[in-house]
Length: 629
Ligand code: M6R
Image (cartoon, rainbow, N blue to C red; front, side):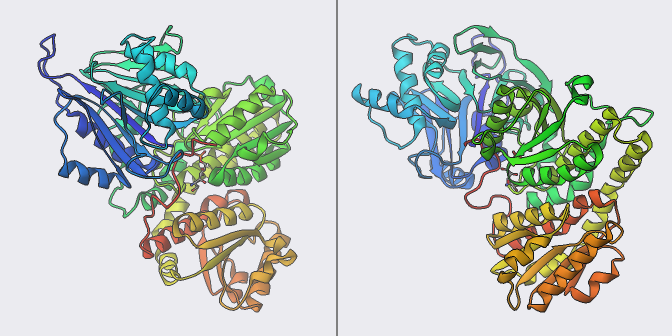
């Protein structure tokens, strides 16, 4: 969950007489941490190698606190360093628990992402050896163990010390270390936690993901599970934990630094809401051949196997799970394959029925969500074919899956997911249409028509964005609301759940989403005078009974004093009489409507949170990437 960055540049007076490289370690680390801060912001810290050994500064709270500390107590120039932004697990968010942890009399500094499950047994042994601990973290235990192994078995070989230490740690970890006797060297290891190497000219980088060094290089190498890497300004060497040499696979990052900026919007979330036409477009691009037949290049499962699939299980958490719920309606309609959607953290604790003809589809923006990763691993062990729908190239879930369909939404920085949600729905729709094509559930012409309608979605989202003033005004007027309810039916139900989640996570307002038909079975008791309720209304051009039933629901709650705000298709006259305000969305096929209906609800949440003065991008208690179970 934490963000990690490492840097080595060529030092002045290098033995080979080479010119120093232009970056100071501190500049690189702070820039990397700024971009990685979405991963956690409980504390931030850096350590650099200087002529006097390791020097470190760290501070609880956001990166700005560390920057203030560095102004007050500057660090000397250095070409080697590590930096960390923390999402607290072991030990509260204090200065003392912040990383780096400097041990061995100031010789060694370590940062860590993940949770070391067997830290207690190591800690007990180290205390028996006479080690004193200053923090409550598992990281300090790993650092002390590394220091001990370095001095004893590894006899001053830092890479070997990290290999041996990593063998003894259980759980999830990315560890980075620098040592005073190894100038120009950063060592790192990973298990169940991400790490990417960035390759420069006379300098090299490490990052939790590529945004940690995107300002400096686009050349990157993925580190595989259970590997150690040693970087110097001129080289990187990868081994497994036993010390056997390994090859790294280089790739070029397709994002540029500008894509990770706010583009003039007050928050990343608002920028990302406005990125949605492009995110949908990019996710659709290049998926069909000249005759209009879908071709999913990254689908590495034999078509003959896919034809035999008789059950699909979608695994995901949070917003991604709601995208899965939307996808279920379309996949079952188009392919006639029974599709279950399950929260990844619940999945492996029951006894799910999985066979070799089950396709398990994981949805994850980050590709690092530990709950989802563990569920995918479990499904693989049980013999399922696994496929990832993911927004982050090279992340763990797609790497460990049999097949992948990347969404091309670009980096999503705000903790509240928006454009990834839409891109996931589009990708899952492509999967559904691909299966329908393969299995002959739909005529080619029908598939072409749906693809053509999907192609019109970006312009329709843009139309909603261009007319957002009324929903924003409503949001500002409701900044003191204590509770907001959301109702939907059919594909509108997961939209209601997602609308409620957005409001909860960034505006800290009690919000619930309900299936409109469920209202009379209990939730209607919540309705009292003035209760705001958003209702996502299905198209009047869809199943007639569905539309009229939701209109009746609006009447029922209005009669009991609710303030009704309705998301309805343009030209839907029937809802007008019962709505305090109608927010229109352009016409589309009923199954594609969630791609439009969610947009006003995202805008509503962002505007309301902003009006309350909250940090829209980094809501309290949350982190972008949840890499612990
Ligand atoms: O990276 P993932 O898609 O796997 O993340 C899953 C959830 O943690 C994520 O969607 C979360 O619910 C968001 N904060 C929602 O806005």
